[in-house]
Image (cartoon, rainbow, N blue to C red; front, side):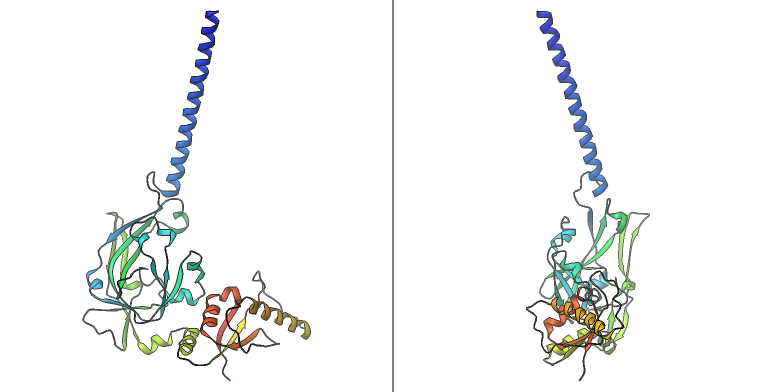
Length: 332
């Protein structure tokens, strides 16, 4: 009897040891999978952020001068989740946005990230107080690259802190002017920053980031700068001055899937198609926006109405959703 109990004890002990080994192996495999997945996504075994940041010195000439908004631009306000894991960049809740992005109807890129987009008035002045080099790591670099992306940290007259991606990402529409400390801020000759104003790179041989100011600026007259403003912005300026305007809008011949709508040769059917396009457009405008003196053209997808600032801004911000081809003033 004692031998049978002894054998049973040994068998049970063997089963327990085998189960313990299986559990240890399973835990080890899970740990390897977790660490492997963590490394693939974050590019590191210890870092829980796909980004790293490094502060660089501000080029001396840039630090001594004033960076001024030469054309009305925008600022995206709020905590951007993308850089929230970075100590410095994650603490800055204002990003200077190029006017070209908003003028092309890309406001939703920011609002979809929970940011609020507000106007940044012409004449707003900044001082450059920092430069940050941001690297990206892990799986997501396959479609965007690892960088670095250089950001200039700005401070305005009210000591509010902003970040702006290295000036001149859109060379076709530069909007920030630079004035050396000795130059007056009011002058007919405007000198704009562009991508050529900076030399930014990663020194591969040394593994160090490099950001310098080249001094190259775009000379433009104040008249030419004003003339480059989009038509809708000029209309908005006139509305702000109290002028009365009538908007003229041409709609795209596109359905909800953005497929082209072929207008019928039959007059009655053609007018029905056009009326349907116009009605869908009007229904997409929020009820709280005032619409007055709306007139619809029966022969083509034109529509006109009295202008107001809230309406104009909504139309510009939602051009794709509303399927707007262009907006102009109807002169009577």
